[in-house]
Image 1 (cartoon, rainbow, N blue to C red):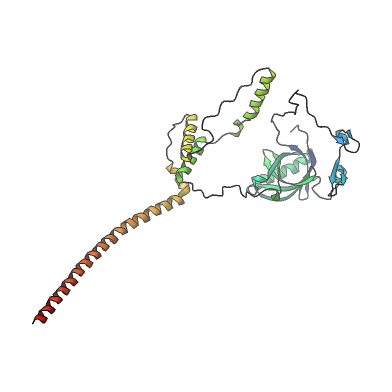
Image 2: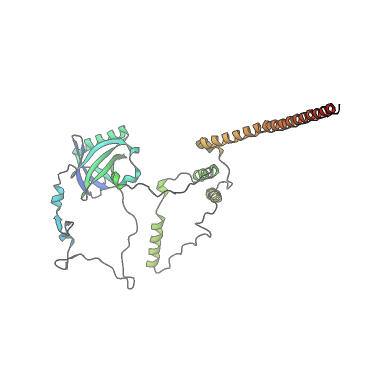
Length: 337
């Protein structure tokens, strides 16, 4: 059982079945935290909360919520006001539908939580919902209220627990307009083959092996300065880094470097077996070459035909000229007679 403080207590509404649950955070932040200080003397910079009417500092217990109207008027809103909202999701995670998981756009994914069964009476209905989700291979779409607003959620099974991912509302996800290049770019098959080779060389990775190197480097700097030592300097960037003048050369060098780092042969070889995935461009290319060959083949008879016709024309011209000359001689003889 998780020994984590719950951030919300309520129930899952599964039709007429109510499952008491506690909502706990499924993730935790391990980043290094910094404090703001006065750079000149190292003094802490603090923000104090003052009441404008009384011109004095107030404690957290004295601070409440208020809605600012369009004319600047502040309307106090209490926790009792929010708890008494006339909506079913105020204290309930309401399941509204079951859909295939691939229907959820990853862009909508937000914070993640675990749903913990609220005591022994919740064990049976909690297990029922978990097994139903498993067997259906679907996720549950939910609506719930948290931190002053109604939210969209998704329930799915993680191990033996039910997890809930907060989802952004569809109208909160921006369309990718103006993001992709607006120029026409042609990617050659050789470039795709090299990209495939680079992907194959990098291979897969166990996510458990990945760690936050930036955080570790920051912790080393803090430890070194605390011990009065000089932090280790970062290595100088390689010359020419960041500029890609020749895409093919860059891909070939990337494949070569990746293979060398894995102790494999550095030679970059073509990948004919991967060309089947892009059969259409290849087939089109084949058709072009075939049509070209046909054109070349058919062009020869045309040339020979034109030559023959030219020869025929010449012989015909000669015969016509001969007839004319013969006719002229006959006519001259008749006149002389």
